[in-house]
Amino acid sequence: QVQLVELGGGLVQAGGSLRLSCAASGRTFSMAWFRQAPGKEREFVAGITWNGISTYYTDSVKGRFTISRDDAKNTVYLQMNSLKLEDTAVYYCAADNVLRYRGSNWAASTMDSWGRGTLVTVSS
Image (tube, rainbow, N blue to C red; front, side, top):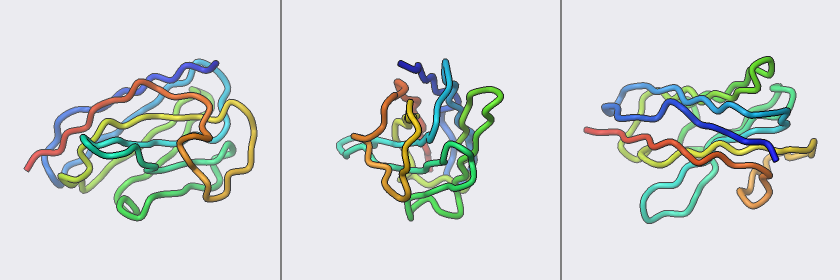
């Protein structure tokens, strides 16, 4: 089982930026970021295919967040710009441990490995 460790969360003012990173202990394939706000279900935020060619975003973050990966470092990043109050949540990294075709299907139940999460708090 691949271990995932997220870093980079914190407190930021609305309109500011944060960069999250997720380091994997071994080889991963498609990777994604999810988030869970208090009292809400975990939701997909962004995903990147195993080769880095395709990226997917939930509508609320398009144009503000960018997912990328550095396979030499087994790390995936989430650059978050123009942060809003509603972006406040615990952000989780998730990965496929096997190669599978995803297309636009990034259901949380289909991901193989999960990190423990990092808290992002956006203040006014």
